[in-house]
Image 1 (tube, rainbow, N blue to C red):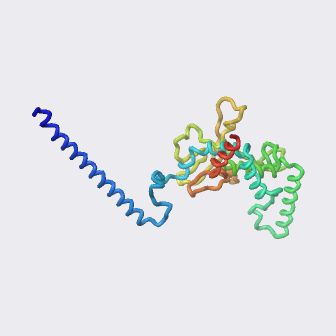
Image 2: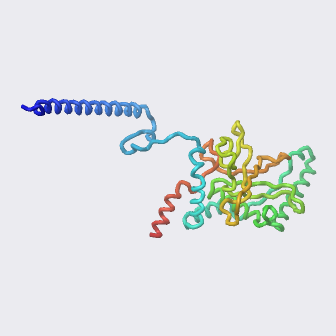
Length: 289
């Protein structure tokens, strides 16, 4: 008998023993994993938290609300606007919502400042009537006087504000005061969401999130506004940033941020069609095909 004939059977037996041992260890590991999963599932009360063979990859991480959306927000807004402008279903949904909420018109009601609370009821009534008459006449005669650009009436601005709220998830109103030569002492500028942007020197600063600035305690302080829209075809060269605080030096409101947060820690809102945008886009592609 040769040397090879003597050593091969022993090596074959050793390899078979190793394979059997590895298989046994793998079986024991699977048994331990199955036992731990069974133990976890036995103490879970909600079916949405269970794990089974139909949901093997449904693993999620718990993250801050801004971390979930801040990098996707620009793309979601662009897709939302594209669908609303070009898709009949999406545009119809938004148009119907705006009509139901805004209606044929939303008027302006004048209110007296708190400083006049000590006046007599007769004086307050007279001042209230004068203020209401002034606003009513200005809305009817100078319909664009509320708009900083003097292009939109009050009704159009209200409509635009709600449309931006639906398509972008956020809308910003900036208030301008002390306008010489104007009948109204203030006007409103509607700022689109992409003009609220973090300046380059504040990128990475945890207190400035997508153009919104917060204090160390988490209080909203104001916004950073670009002087131009990043998608403006007339935009050339560098842009400048201006910080607009929540209130001006007189203590009057300077900026308002309207949004509906999906979580308590969210600093901005999501587009209204966020949940159905993929479905609407698939339907549009199906029709084109």
